[in-house]
Image (cartoon, rainbow, N blue to C red; front, top):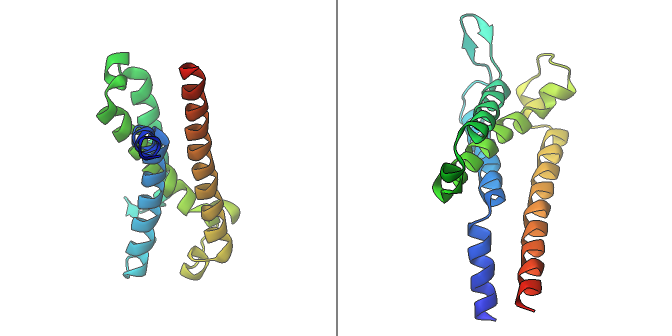
Length: 150
């Protein structure tokens, strides 16, 4: 039983999906805490309103490019892989956090809409799907390991 738990823990820690989920949760927590603490949702650059999902898109694109540009040896390095996974998750979290912006077709929305039930529901669904993928992936790895032992 203990060896099974140790094997599960090692497999979980080495799974990039864990770091993606951590990035998503961190991004949502940071964005929500910032707004709740009195920060403004609006970010302006040169007089142009920049929503934080744009920052998320940039992060996701940069991580995607880095994944293709880096050599296989670099991507086998767990620290590099986990950092890229976390940054991808963080960018995804920033995008998901602005789901009301997408639903309202880019119209200006209020702070009350930022904490809308539908927005929280959408974020919860994304997190549940990611957790299902993580544990589904873990189960598949477990089954593959059991087949190799036979």
